[in-house]
Length: 473
Image (tube, rainbow, N blue to C red; front, side, top):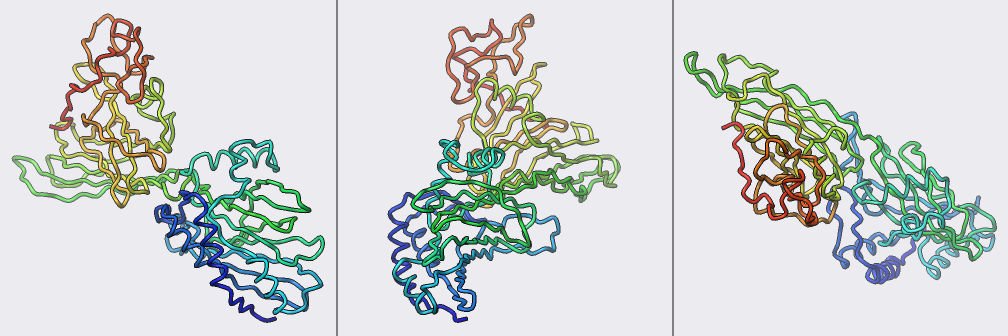
């Protein structure tokens, strides 16, 4: 066997550069980095990886081409074992039987030079990727795979990464199968791979989707055709909620007469919600005034649940009255054995796995004997962190993270009622989840019949005068 010098890196790179510049910029995220939106940078990345290493085996007349393109996105994929290394050493290999007309490495190199690389990474997804979203009837595959594949790519927050490759089996032999091996990482755990590919055989274009099985860190696709565009989509199959670790505390001093001040910090709870870029974690902290200096683990704890079923009533009311498109929901509850009057500076610190995300926080407060559902919008910092101040024990805080690319909001009032405050008729109380179209939630439409006498919100009241309460003051 001989290694192909190819020596055509400049030519292949130029072709890839031209191709990339002619395509629209796509927000395909790979790894822990933000998606590349600059067309020139994305084109250059494609050009840099355009050349591949091809080996011709004259004994079996097979061609094997390997490419090491942009990373797979698994750098953000948590492992069940913290000692298990996870890297971004993505490798894609193409192997097929070559036509009997090719007998040497040099002849294969010449064919590659004339017809283009056997495999290259491209910026646009395959036709099958787009077709499954628009008209699944035009895509082949099992009904189960088609339904799952369509749901997976309905929102980029659902998956870790999407990488597309163009395969051209130069001088392929008659009736031979092209094998494509996609190897994101030998130590990958809890990762699913769906493949969306458009293959050409005998002049006919066929779109297909299927779920591939992980075997030794590799996914194998058998292509029945001479050329194809293949989009590999990786998703996190682990959607579990990890229990928070032990609560720690430190003393800030005090005495037996006036009491002691201890700072409590809970362990971290983690939720893996399907996308490696949106794995959540949260902890809580609070200052507690207590009679003794000895720590009490029961004085602060945090728990998490996923999904709408366990959400705050404020979130449920908002979704009922003015639904909005948020990608993921997690519900956090802090409990404490201490008296509420002895707790100050209570807050939740959370990480939503990505920078510059709008996170809408919902909760319920009792104000003047009435339960009022509220929300507050926060924006995650460069490391994906947010802080929810002024939390109350035993209250459910539902955190909903906006989809990728949604512009952050900047409400004028830090706490906005889901149902705006208004005069209360004791015989006609306002229930937070009472149907009504003008709810004080952005995007709600006015309804002339939706007023206080009908249990809804007055159309003119948007909640701008709602007081912000100091829960632990």
